[in-house]
Amino acid sequence: MFCNRAMEMVRELQRAPQGQLLAFNEDGLRQILEEMKNLYEQNQSDVNEAKSGGRSDLIPTIKFRHCSLLRNRRCTIAYLYDRLLRIRALRWEYGSVLPNVLRFHMSAEEIEWFNHYKKSLATYMRSLGGDEGLDITQDMKPPKSLYIEVRCLKDFGEFEVDDGTPVLLKKNSQHFLPRWKCEQLIRQGVLEHILW
Amino acid sequence: MSEAYFRVESGALRSEENFLSLDDILMSHEKIPVRTEIPIPRLGAFFPERSGGADTDNTIPQGSKLELPLWLAKGLFDHKRRILSVELPKIYQEGWRTVFSADANVVDLHKMGPHFYGFGSQLLHFDSPENPDISQSLLQTFIGRFRRIMDSSQNAYNEDTSALVAKLDEMERGLFQTGQRGLNDFQCWEKGQASQITASSLVQNYRKRKFPDLDH
Image 1 (cartoon, rainbow over the protein chains, first blue to last red):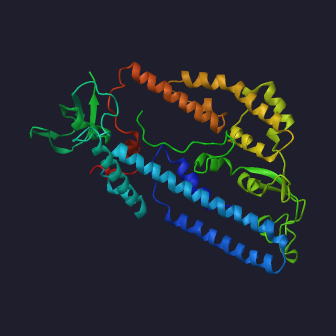
Image 2 (cartoon, each protein chain N blue to C red):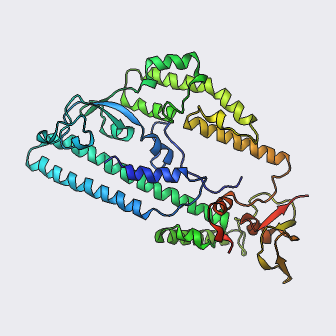
Image 3 (spheres, chains in turn red, blue):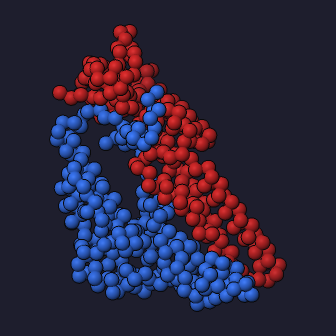
């Protein structure tokens, strides 16, 4: 009646450090929907009684439950929407391929949404800048040079540069590489951008 | 600096809350004292001390004093006060308003209900005759405290700020954090690190929290 379950879910999301995606709370959602079903059924029966049995004194009771239904709905929608905002942020901060651990935190519908979003973004990016398209997820900070110095933070393996030369990314090795190749790896924490 | 998660902002300081704002949902969960103006049948189970009991159809009698969450009070309130009438919580009444006008800085607004300004602004919906005084009090309290918040947020660099934010309400804490972000961005720029590509803090957070197999 007081939407405690819904509030727990909202609080859980609010507490998660900036933008982190938590596991989808399937159980919680089910409990909220059950609470809503009960409230709705009680209201249906009271409305019938008020109409046919002349019990207009039930009207505040019906209103009470109705407020509760609206509140549960609001909390649920806000929960789902905030999660979508976090999932959207993943595309920009992480890239288009999410690690499995994160995928397990998303419901099937959220994964579908993510795929749609990826596609929309890709279509949009292709439509920019003439024939080639423009990758707007690159150069999030204004670039100062074409090539940058990077240090490898963990073993990543072989990496091919534009002219086919393979580069071995081993922990602590340093390389001088084109900016556009490294940006995503730096954001993912594989490489570290070194400034002079 | 290029964080891609933009949460829905609170609308509580404006005329209406934002439906999708998690902050507003938490704010409107706080309790407000009300008085029932008519009997409310069948809900006595939720307010056992007030309930008339099973032989009254579990009715909450007229004139009962209850503590309801703000969202419920808002939903049931109308200008004719047919179902309930609302009382002002103590901190918005004259006594505390005088304290605030004396020195707004000493008060622990976090303890007084962590959403002092948001809740207070939404309180104005209940047509209390004290509304003009309440709104003045909210405004003047904020004006009195703002300077210290701005000052401390702009000068606390790389230190433990928990003592500075302890007595701030949620809105003030948000302001403080914005100030800190500005300060950190500026320092970053001064050090010439503004153009350094950094690992996304989102990614770093996932790494820290028990995701060891993130290294694909």
